[in-house]
Image (cartoon, rainbow, N blue to C red; front, side, top):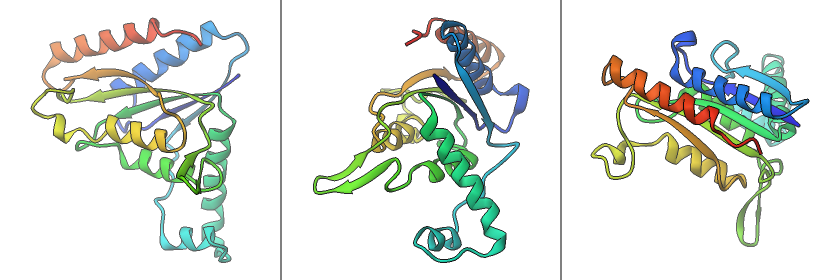
Length: 202
């Protein structure tokens, strides 16, 4: 059994999403004998954002020397994702959506012929055999029915993009309101860490 652990917060040890994603991984490690864990920090080893040269290479053009190393990094990221049985993702909200570092990672795993394909019925996901657990941290309150719900483009985006590649039921653990004040932050973190501890193992 292989677990891929991804963090995308720029805040290092001060990050709520990192603390919660680590707690999720620890819970699964204790509950799954022999679990193999691969960790990738998207801020310490960021991927380049896609460019015209990337897309040309994907369509068969010979990449220049400067691009080859980055294409190899992108292939390594895709291989890690494809090999994983479980993916644990730390995803903070930055300006109402995902960090750009996380978007760069997603652009390397949403690949036609690898994680989805187009057929007579439209797009078909090919990565539906994975369990995906996402630790979300948000400065305010964006749940359904809240005044700010219309501005929520983190959870909604991740539900859509993972659904697109076949993962229809990603699991979420939330830490909301962490910028409202210290009391809210501690309460949100404690609740999310408890949810991680209570996570079912399989």
